[in-house]
Image 1 (cartoon, rainbow, N blue to C red):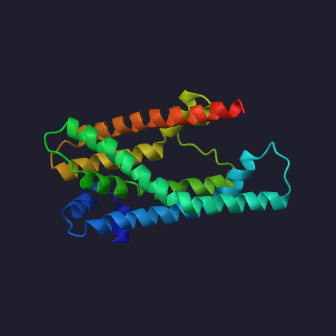
Image 2 (image 1 turned 90 degrees about the vertical axis):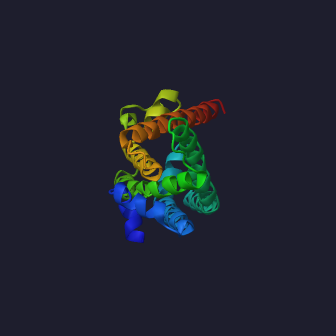
Image 3 (image 1 turned 135 degrees about the vertical axis):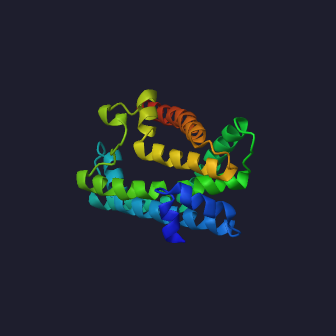
Length: 221
C-alpha cells in the first residue's frame, strides 16, 4: 500500500480509483498523513540549523544560545507540525470541495475531498526529496522552483505570491484535479485540473497576503 501511495504523484489515474472504491478509507487517509508528518519532521531536523542561522544572522549569539534556539525550534515543530498539516489538508479540502461542486453536477463529499487532498499531498514528500539536498548543499532555505528566484523582497505581496506558485506545488494541485475527476466519474479531467489550479491561485493569494503582512510588521518592530 505504501508503494501505491507514493505512485499517486506519478500515476494518479491508476491509484485514485483504488482509493475511491476501497472499504478502508480511514487507512487511505491516515497512512499518507503520517508519512507526510514524518517527512515534515525529518525535513525540520535536517534544515532547522540553517533556518535559525538565517533568521538570527544580524544578532550576536554564542554557540550555546544557537543550540538552545535550534532545540526550542525543533520542540515547537514536534507540537505544531501535526496541527498545521491537518489544518492545511482540511482548509485546502474546503476550497476544493466548494469550487468543484459549484462547477459540477456530480457532487463530491467532504470525505472524498479530504482523501483526494491527503493523498495528492504525497507530492510534498517528493518535493522534500528534491529540495532538502539543495538546501543543505547551498546552506540556504531560499530554494525556489518558481519565478521568486529572481526577486529578493520577501515583504512584497507579489513576491510572496509567485513564491507560492512553485512548480512542485502546481504538480500537487494537478494531481488533486485528476483525483476530483476520478471520484466524480465525470470524464472531464482538464476541467477539474483547471479548477484545482484556480484553487491554488486563490489559496496562494491568501497565503501571500498573510506572509507579506507579517514581513511588513517585522520591518516596523
